[in-house]
Image 1 (spheres, one colour):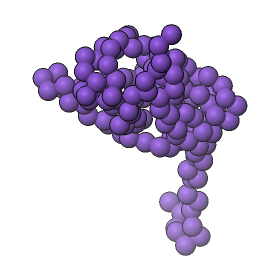
Image 2 (spheres, helix red, strand yellow):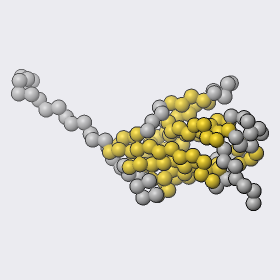
Image 3 (cartoon, one colour):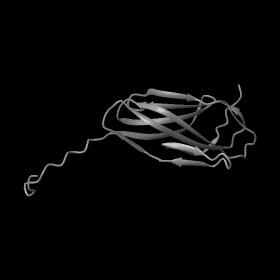
Length: 146
């Protein structure tokens, strides 16, 4: 078994969507966040994007991303990416993935765990909070009735 050389993770971000320009390959991150809100649970988050940037790695590697509900260490979902191939250790490689229709079971703290060849290389957490529905404004005594 060969030793695992952990890559340098320059960024690991959570957003609503990652868009890649087909001509330049530049990525736009839309709606970066650290908190989500919902009045009801479980709730369906329609779009979630992940962006990560690596260097100091070369060769072909399997990448997995787990979403874990930290309140009880429950695995919410796992994404296995097609093998990535990086030709030069000095190269900076960035990746954007979009997750459609993610079910968030409860309020609390969640964490994405980025793994390469089974080894944890980065973590990114975010909080999900219970939103209180807006209260209906009550008519004031000073306002005339319609």
